[in-house]
Length: 275
Picture 1: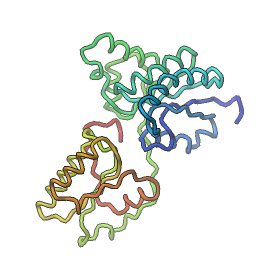
Picture 2: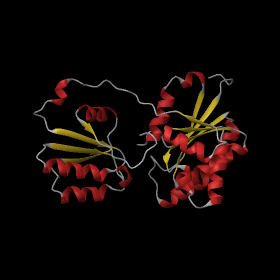
Picture 3: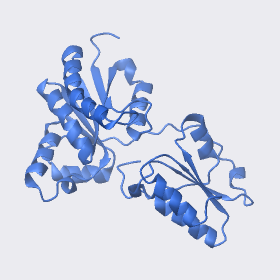
Picture 4: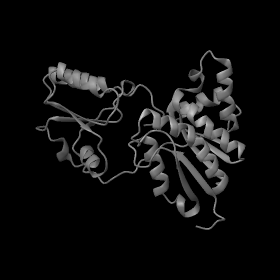
C-alpha cells in the first residue's frame, strides 16, 4: 500500500469473535475500502479471548499503553472507535478516545447499541456533561438508526452525527415454495446472544403456547450467553426438550443451512440500535 493513502485504525474485538462488531469489522475489511484506504485493526475488549480474571485485569491496564505506542509509531490519520453506550464499554473506550485525541488523531466514534444518551447517566449532571463532551469532541459520531440519531441530536446538539445503517451480506438462499410445505412442522430459529434483554425466554414461551394450541412447531436456538443455564431449566420445566434445541455457536455454512431450513426468525429483543 502507498504511504500516501489515508491510514485508518479500527478498534474492536477479535475478528473471529462471535460478535456483531466483529461482523462489522470483517465487512469493512472484506469490502472495497482497503483498495482506497490502508486499514489496520487494534484489538480491544474481552470478546474472543480465553483468559482468567487477573489476565483480563492486566490486559485492561496495559492495552491503552499499547494503543498509545501503536498510534505514535504507526501514525494513523483516523481512529475508528467501535463502542456501545453501556458502562463497561464506555469507560474502557474513553481511555482510547482520550489518547487518540491527545495524539491529534481524527476519531470516528461509532455506537453499536446500548442506552440512549439521555438515559445513560440520567440524573447525574457531571457524568452527562462528560458524555456530551465526548460526543461533541469526536470528528463524527456514527449511529445505526434514525431513532438514535434523533436522541443524540437532542442530547448533544453540537455533535457531528451521521446515520449509517448496518450492512448485510445477502447469501444465496432457497426461497422456493417447497420450504413452506404444509406437512412440515413450523421451524423457528433464534440466533443471538442468550441474555434476558434479547427476549430469549419469550421465544421459549411462544413455543410452549404454540404447542399448547396444537401447532406442530420446533425451536432451534443458536448462541451462547449468561441465560443459557436458566434457559435449559425453562425448556425442561415446559417439557419441550424434544422440540427446543440449543445448538451453541453456529457460524459459516452451518449458519446458512440453519437459515434455509427455518420458516421464522424469532428475535424479540428489548432494544437494539439495528440488529
